[in-house]
Amino acid sequence: MIDYFKIGILTACVLGSFAIGWGLRNRDFNDYKREIEHAVKAQEAHVESIKKQQELVNKGITNEYEAKITALRNYYKSTSVWNNTSSSKVPGLSAAPSATDVITAYNILAGQCAETTAQTIALQDWIKGQVGIK
Image 1 (spheres, rainbow, N blue to C red):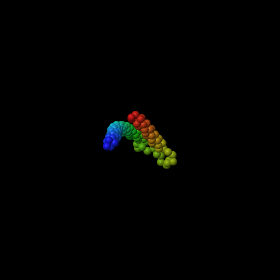
Image 2 (tube, rainbow, N blue to C red):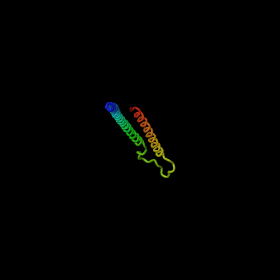
Image 3 (cartoon, rainbow, N blue to C red):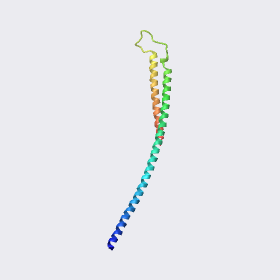
Image 4 (cartoon, helix red, strand yellow):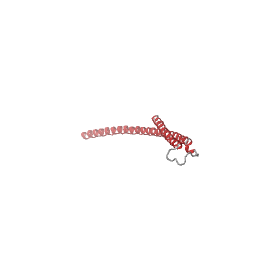
């Protein structure tokens, strides 16, 4: 009878130690999950902040670029010979390019170069703006 009593106490002690060990590990695991949840929320807030900063940079660069392109196009359109209504064509001389054609071609080329330069500058500004976001 004493042997069964000792075995019962030993069994209860073993089961109790398993239960205590499981409880400690479960508490540690729950603490770990809460810590991870806080880290996830902080990371999500950081990502949202970066997205907002990128949107601001993109919007600013886009607006500035569009304004510059519009100004360049208006400038080259206003200085173009297209607006000149007087005709300098000489009847019967269709093979030789006229000065009007040369000036018009130059204005078109200069306008395209100016637009390409503006695009490059806008891209550089965008990259500088993106690098500053942290």
